[in-house]
Length: 83
Image (cartoon, rainbow, N blue to C red; front, side, top):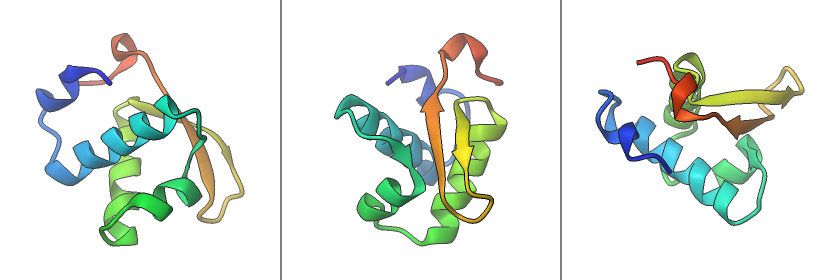
């Protein structure tokens, strides 16, 4: 986890999605919508909105998707983030 996540103006929910992504990655699990939904305690819409924001800012990158609601992501290096 990069501490910069707290200084780039993201809302609390999006920052929380990032923290969950980091937690999954640290535990060796795939960062996927399926795995995130299992541990996310907010609404699905807020989760998907957070993922979309993180992806637009290049904080995460979609690596595979079934073009429905299932996708897998990877964390990107902070040097590639869009502030």
